[in-house]
Image (cartoon, rainbow, N blue to C red; front, side, top):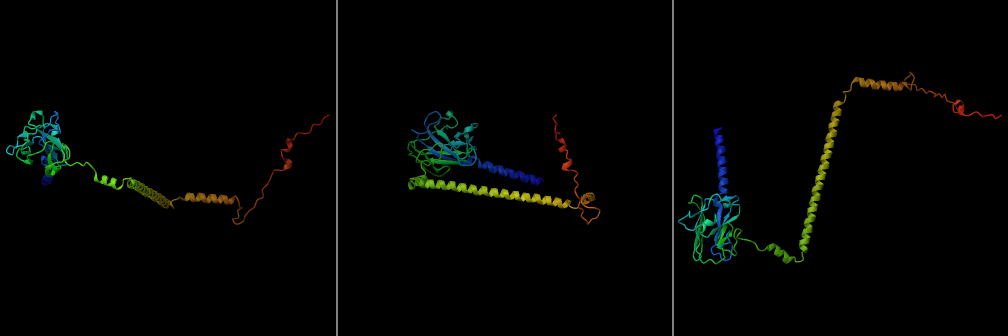
Length: 299
């Protein structure tokens, strides 16, 4: 019994550890960096500064509190992300920005260091222990103003100069739909779309008809089976009750038949008796005739 409890406890610990690992900060990635911000995204104070974007590449929410951001390889604990701020939680597949403005007094998302706009820059994210490196990137020198450096696919891929700045959103966004453009080019009048739509509606109605027809047939068959079962049950009850009538019933039936025969026959059982109907009525002795008024003799 003790071994069984220990096994269950061990299994729960393993499952909990797997769940915790799936939602740890190890799944957070440095996703995009803007070194020179002249005419781009502004912070909550309306100011333009360099920024770094972090991306949660896991299916669970991740809390960055207690982790560290740094721009020095020899100083991993340069800026600790404050604890107690609910905004440090990153939802699954979402982004958050940290302003590289060396003004930590402005809030949780303003770090205590800044980038060098004229040279190479380094930034890294460390776990809460201050030793475990989660992610790092070196931004080459010569970055252009309002041009970001990031991953070509969120959370993975290759670092490169991006075609457009995408703070707090996906690094790859579609400005057009190739399929729609191809459809418009090959079917400018919309005939194909019309025929396709009508075919879809017709097929849908046909499928609904067949489905409801099958449901109706199934309901009818079920009703017939239930009726047959009920009839069979009644027949079984009648068969079970057959032969259970008492002798008094048969005696009563026999007496009724005997009385019926006595009304039409004499005592002979094989002779048919025909009786003449007697009429005591005669038109000559009818009382109707006596209701006439006697003639009155005038004197």
